[in-house]
Picture 1 (cartoon, helix red, strand yellow):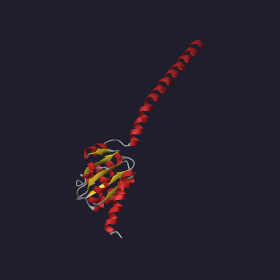
Picture 2 (tube, helix red, strand yellow):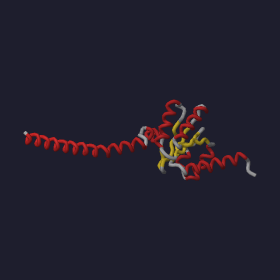
Picture 3 (tube, rainbow, N blue to C red):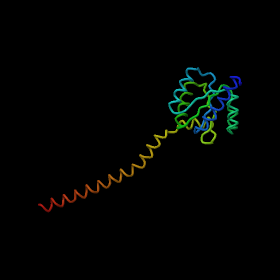
Picture 4 (tube, helix red, strand yellow):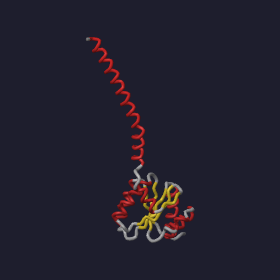
Length: 175
């Protein structure tokens, strides 16, 4: 029979692997000095965007990273760390983290991975300044819609002028 500590480590390691495989990417944060209620609030906020904050022992995280082939991220696992897995929108997750970081300066963005590309803390901060996917879609629709609206207005004005011209001709012939 296995010891409970070993069983917990195995379950945590398998959870890291399954979360990583089912997500678009991961961000590593150091939270030393951030109060537990604040971390719980961050966890709830991230959950609303489809992200998951997972806190695990460093040795377990390092072992899981090595088995996943993420050797470049192993060095980022130091002191109390949290792994944030995002399934949908990395921009929303990075915005939440950067906003939380402004209020809690002890939270450190260590890096991460997005679609097999390594992220630095600067990349995560840059990503937080990008508009969300919905805003980008609205901008594209507006850009595509603009010329069509202008064409309709021009054609409408041409028809109005033509009708106005015909009306003037009719009035001049009726006199």
